[in-house]
Amino acid sequence: MKNVPATLIIVSGLSGSGKSTAARALEDEQYFVVDNLPVIFLRDFLDSHAKNGLDAKVAVVLDVRNRGYLEQFPQILTDIRRDGYKADLFFFDASDEALLRRFSETRRRHPLMSAGNLPAAILEERRLLEKVRDLATLVFDTTGLTVHELRRKIMEIVHQGTMERIPMSVHVQSFGYRFGIPPESDIVLDVRFMKNPYFVDALRPLTGRDAEVGAFMAAQPEFRSFLEHLVDMLRFLLPEYERENKSYLTISIGCTAGRHRSVAVTEELRRRLAEKGIITSMTHRDLGRNMK
Figure 1 (cartoon, rainbow, N blue to C red):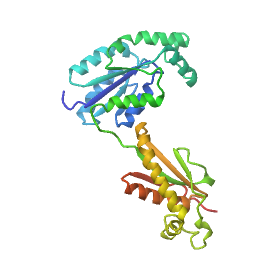
Figure 2 (figure 1 turned 120 degrees about the vertical axis):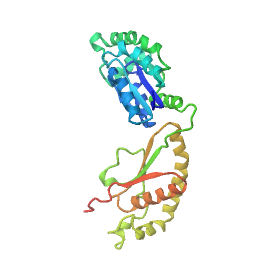
Figure 3 (figure 1 turned 60 degrees about the vertical axis):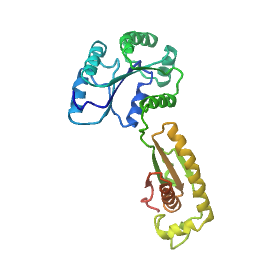
Figure 4 (figure 1 turned 90 degrees about the vertical axis):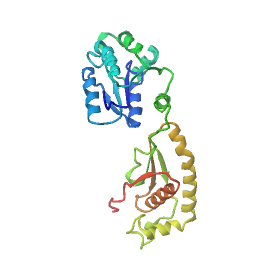
């Protein structure tokens, strides 16, 4: 077999044990992830992927939702390994008590619920997956793990033996409080304590992207001091977020209308972060809104 994917991870295990968390973590690490691919198409999918030179890192989620999975998967896994695919099987497990609690909290239906009540469905799934578990490269017991701890554990395994890592994406944006706080925000900063260019007749029709407004803001000691403290704080926080395997961070900076102060601060923050080697994207959410 030529041009096989460099990495193939098959994610399996009990319902509610953390397979979705694993899939999202792998996707954030730029794996091409397919959830619930019919097992009879696994070989064709891999061959097509390799033939067309697509993603070198592939992950496939297979579980009891997949009809025919249990009967066919062991032989299919043996065949693709024999033909040159380096296939790792990550099996996710948890105690019956943990699974019962998770299904109760999420109110989701177990895929084997037709087998009876929830405890009976979990017991049946565990029995059905015994042979698959025996084939696993790694078994993850998620009973006592939070979502974040499980994610970190998966990434530690994925990164083992390599320093390659997808850097966290940092996005800074301005907004106006009168239009609401952006719901995707991780960090929200209020700059309405600064002097407002809106009350200067010559600056009112301009925005925080104009040089005149920028000069007005830069002349304020609190503007300079705020940015110095903020950059120092972010230099501390960003590595800590990355250590917790956070893939992206959104910093939202607000003023009254999102037109002057927050825009100027966001522009200057992005410039200062770039000087520190921190690559960011930037938007001004409310800059184009009508002020009337």
